[in-house]
Image (cartoon, rainbow, N blue to C red; front, side, top):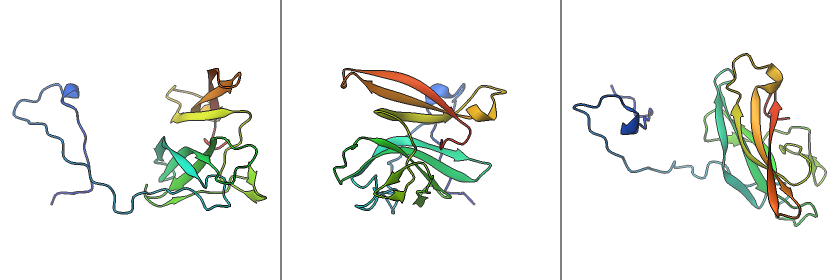
Length: 164
């Protein structure tokens, strides 16, 4: 019996030999529960918008999908700026935003990742270097807005858990 839950996307450029094989692209179908992650409630830091694309990685050891994204609040707070947040899911569809104990918003703990200044999170990845120390397991690329938006400075940050 064929398993219809497995999806293979393969570009013919990456196949050494394709004699007797035809390639075609099927129409994409939205998940019935789309969107799978919504902005927060009006009293939360990511209430106006969450930014995609974000980074979604699957951690096979934890059997969890992990997501890093940017959010924006609708309350017009003085520090209103795109801020980084973290969410996780067991199935990639139903997401929770765990409280990280790093940043409060309106007096409540949030899933926001603490950062200084006007830093935008670009993406997160698992460090591909063999033998890397556990403290540098996750790498994130940040864009720091400098001189009143006149230029961006790119920086890397390292983390053991991807949350700090």
